[in-house]
Amino acid sequence: MRLRALSGALTLAALVFPASGLAASYTLGLRPSADPATVAAAVERATGVRPTSLTPVHALAVRASPARLRGIAGIAWVERDRLRRVAFVPTDPLAPRQWYAAANHAYDAWEVPPPLAPVRVAVIDSGIDLAHPDLAHRIAGSKSFVGGTAQDTRGHGTIVAGIIAAELDNDVGIAGLSPAAELLVAKVVAPNGTISVQAEARAIHWAVDHGARVLNISLGGLRDPRNPSRDTYSRLEQEAIAYAVGKGAVIVAAVGNADQAPQTPWRFASYPAALPHVLGVSALTRSGASPAFSNRDAVYNDVAAPGEDILSTFPRSLTAARAACVDQGYTPCATDDFRPPDGTSFSAPQATAVAANLLGVRPLLRPEQVTAIIERTAVDANDGTGCRACGPGRDAYTGWGALDATGAIGSLTGTLPPRDANEPNDDAGEDAYRLYFPAGEKARFVKASVDFWDDQDDVYGIFLHHGETLYVSLVPAQRARMALALWRPETVSISDLARQDLRVRISATPGRRERISWTADAPGWHFLQTRLTAPTGTPVAYRLSIVRVR
Image (tube, rainbow, N blue to C red; front, side):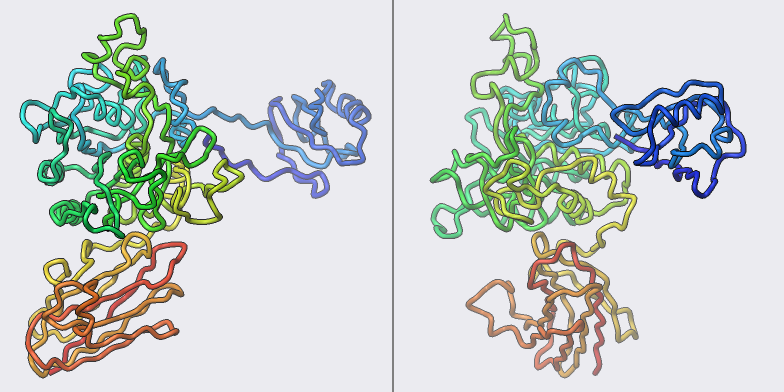
């Protein structure tokens, strides 16, 4: 609910009253020792109007000029009655059954549907029901990467799309969570149910090239760092994600369900949620607990949202098989696999909707700002909110906590998280951001940011000639534990434990400034690494000063 700030209370002790006033309703706050009946009688004598008791509140209400209340003993303060408005309530008939919208405070930031800038949102999934009355007008484009059209024959993608972008306040069906969203539909699920990373990567590129600012990826592959033989990491997938981030897109992905893992619960988020710059979303039950099916992860689980009994749209061709079901085109009439829909797949689009709304309000936000806002405005999950397994602060079950759509929107009036226009630059080689020096210039200055959970490393490429000396200083904008390192041109990855000998300089002192210097013994692109080595409550902005001297 949007609450307008009250005017300052008017106290009799200070004799502060409006000079005049119409016969509006005024509240009279009584002193603790005052007898309401005695004060009421005095008010009636002074104004000619009998006041009304606000029992059990120790106060009275009266329609009279406040100037006529001067000098009446027992009154502590006077204020004009204020009006409040309820939060926007969609008129869509199934909206009252969308418990997850209330849990996320999806509409509480607005009194009426807001005029947001349109934001293209890609749903990379099984397609959607392209002619669904709650979705058809929200589609900006569609393409299948597995042959045929983007028509959904399974239901999964239509559920996801409905959560995000079902037509709002149209007296039909459900209410989508993002009035800003325009859908780009990318079908990547083959008829046999398989999902090729090649299809996924092509879909990501297509969506970004067609203007997607947010990508929802409610699919995943097993991550098991303890057993590389079954870990499904894909360089192709990571490069596609990096391409999208580099083009300014926010990536939201489900952390995955343990029914697809070797055991329940599973300790690791799925790919692509377990990749840099991806907002990983886990599930919550109605009671606020973390369900056993929701994958845990101390690093890649960023935020949680409702993930059980999710009411949404469903392909009408599939609900027709249950002809007696009243809610045709919606999940109460879905096939057995999705009646009701459960899983982190349906938690992720709730966060996607918040991301789209943030961009609808502030189109110039960068991806790292959007994800930081969603994470840092989440409501900490703990025993008091229903998650007994969750400790205080960030945890492996819910990340930063429960999604709060209104908190995220409200934070836009405050200080925004720092920007980092050089992302993605998480490793050496082609992944580094190359710093070029204008002709005749010896110095470069860089402003950027790091985040322990989402973007721990920034890497810059700097070309040095033989005998050229490099001086670098790093200054974070807040107290933080940071390190600065320089790597030789042969470096392929700063994470390669077998080649740590290629790191020629490192500075990780307790102070607020890190410094290194190096004289090149061979020409080539050297790699400068900044790292945030300990968690912080917010992303850390920093400044690099880089000087080359021959």
